[in-house]
Length: 616
Ligand code: M6R
Image 1 (cartoon, rainbow, N blue to C red):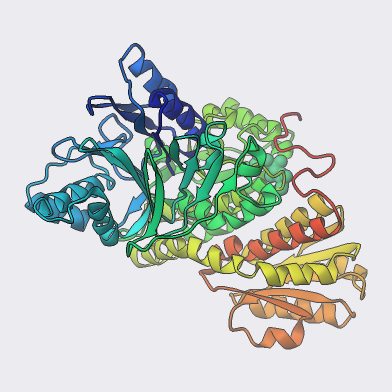
Image 2 (tube, rainbow, N blue to C red; image 1 turned 180 degrees about the vertical axis):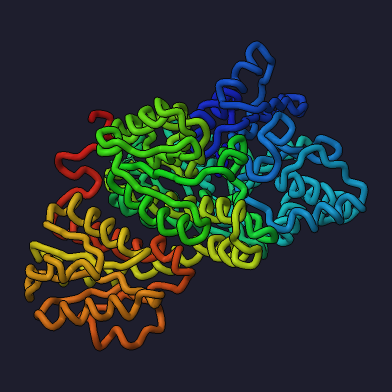
């Protein structure tokens, strides 16, 4: 995930670009750059490894004057975070400049062809091929009457596979900036005689008065007299201009009524971002840069303790099943607030993994400090970059799920589980996990964002189910094996935002107590995908039905049997058993959200709770 910004207007581009980049820094922070075209059409460009403040330091006192330019803040996928791989990138003659967010999947093939055609590349990035392709098309058309930056850009886009949000300009076309979007966000901002491109509207808030959200396959062309939007076939598109009048919160919600719903709906993107650049399909392996430095110590560990609180703890429970099954490493999952008060048995080859969205949770942090005291390896799985847990642990993995603002954790959970799957793959391949199985897991993880999208298409059905059930005062959630933690997470989600009493149980444990609660007023959500414990949970559903309990079943697409068993059925797409929690939790998140809204509550601000719990 990177942040891009573009400006064309009457004002000095430099400060607008830098301010935009500062606001987009949450999207990427390992390198940054800007390019401004001065009045003589001389490109003035600077880029460096590090944060926006490092770029600002680098350009301090430099003359960068001009009314059009581009900016970029990077999160590396192809090529290390360094000065050269930072954006902008340029063509052989340093005429065309580009910033890009996304991944060009066919960059290797394109680069091979371009190298044969004499192009010289300076970076290791996938992005650089785009600018050379544009150069190539422009050259080819030099003597044709169709020669234009726009036409070369369109031809280039038609060849690209993968995801992109691009902003591009050329010193030979000094009054034009082009933008394009596919699977990565891009907005066009409209001000008074000025235009902007940005990864999200918050970057241009206070500058632009209107904003157009580009859709996939759309291209924007801006010049001092106006803008046009067209598709890859060069057909003009009419787009609605939304008002962005100083309403940062509304913008940040991207039109959704609540952050929670926005964050649920953006899971295909957050899951993509969490796995981006981390899967090596051919080797059936995960590439986790943040733990590279402790790779050899990880090969030796004979016990892993995962600590976390709330949702993070539950993600850790899924991790326990995965890591034990595929890596054969014994795992213990512990609630942060309990860890330090018991006497954990930690040998010299033990490691602790702290899972925390915020990276600031006091109980989880205390567990990390306790583990440090004992001298064992400490790892973090943290979403907020440079947070305390991220800094205090020996090594770690960032989620890159983007900021989570809703108090109820949603996209952080699915991202945590996805990364724990990558960790299981990594540890497994260091041990006995076969190449073939590794490749299978890697392939399935790669497909998870697509499956999340399919699960989200169930949103209207879930809303209808919520309408049927929101007045009930109690709910039971059951699941087994990988979906036992999902039952707990579903129960937690509903109780924290709707104040309904919920219980999460392992299906097989129900008969040891909680089944006494079941009657027609105590509905149950059963997470029962077609997996290795399917028959077992069907028995549990039957036990509930025999006691007049109502059942909402979350099962795998194509499972016809469930219709006759449960009162309501939600069908989720099939994936590997270990990965089902990422998909099966989505209907539960949506259910909790809709119940809360139907009850007239604000799911973003549940009573008595805070997003980051920094007290014991
Ligand atoms: O920031 P953390 O992941 O460490 O937070 C841990 C819990 O406080 C958090 O997951 C909490 O349970 C959520 N509100 C659940 O939705």
